[in-house]
Length: 373
Image (tube, rainbow, N blue to C red):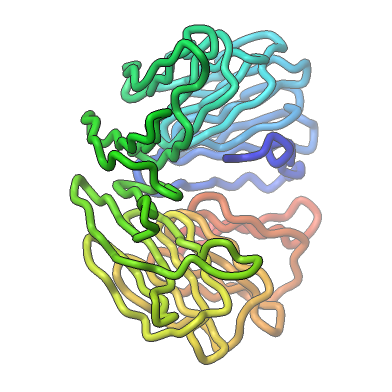
């Protein structure tokens, strides 16, 4: 879940007008503040003014741009124009590919395809993904799920929150009841997964990974459950060996200390023992390859990237970037390596699959796939 503090970072004003592109089912959207302090949105190759004053903060979603304007009103740029949602009440908001989840003090709401739905007047616990929001209605004592414009009642309890553990993936929601029943919501169905509470649960797109009551590692993938067996739980300060969950994939260290990958219903052996680093986000998995370098797993293929471990690696969707030992930028995107020109830079960031490089005062370059914008 994104922190509210992280949302407050603004783009620096710039004169050079450039476009962001967002991959997948998202539309091309971005936003910037120009040298005059006006707020613009790039929308499918068109530039629209969203506000005449610099917003206090904003986010880029898959199909909209939510922001708090200069006088603290909450607005969402959607379908070619900004829409004011409320005046000064919004305290937190989170953007995904399809939804904007936001809170007005204790009230939880969702913005979906241009429509605002109030989920709970008073809420203290929720989890969200690209198309699902699981939340506790503290006044009604029910735990509901928002999905495709519908509200599905999952659990209820007159004494408190009936859900003791939950995890939201892109399109899947998993939870444990007060009676230790472990359930999964997927593709409109509620599946009674286990009748004993698991030790942990994580979720991604089409996938839920969990350690069952006996600490065996299991994966629910597109309606089928795979038992990966006993996996080390760690020792000493490390209470539990990490399990890394992404879109359609899971990475874990097995009983022989080998890094293995569950992808699209199959186990892939890497041959790497006790990797120093393992990073996963969305469709990207990066790991130390056993020879002091790094490799990437993407869409079923392992590719060696470098013979050293970069200090900083940023990942998102289908892309990642890092710096070489000579401080050059490497951009790996959609399965291809893009080498950027050797030059000085002031800032760099990755938004979805767009790499933005600030190379001077109000001077920006944008890279999407193998194109420079």
